[in-house]
Image: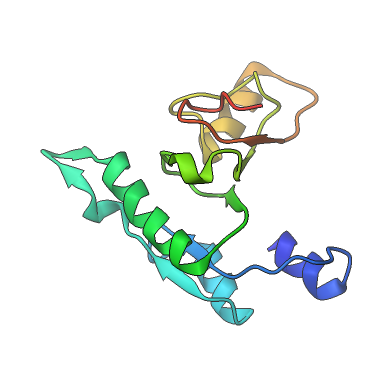
Length: 142
């Protein structure tokens, strides 16, 4: 929502959000995009399972098909709680907004509310978020 608001306010210039992809029909990002007149596409994580296990590679391939169709320059993972396997053509073009200061509270299983619960449980007094490039390893990009 912040990106939509900054663009509308004119404080984020020369930027256009051409597409929002969500992994669940209830994703607030999809609702916010629709309200703002931005194309919203559902790529449901529940549709990408093999033998009961999540097939992130197949899901990522479908997401990439949509991204390539829209000719995106940059992909921002904000609230996207699925592993995204970055293909060579999008290397260094995908960033993630992680809800903690990496290297604390990151890696597989550390997403969304879980991060905040871990921060509180540890008694951390100062926290924040990290924006980093996405690699094919959880929260390891620069």
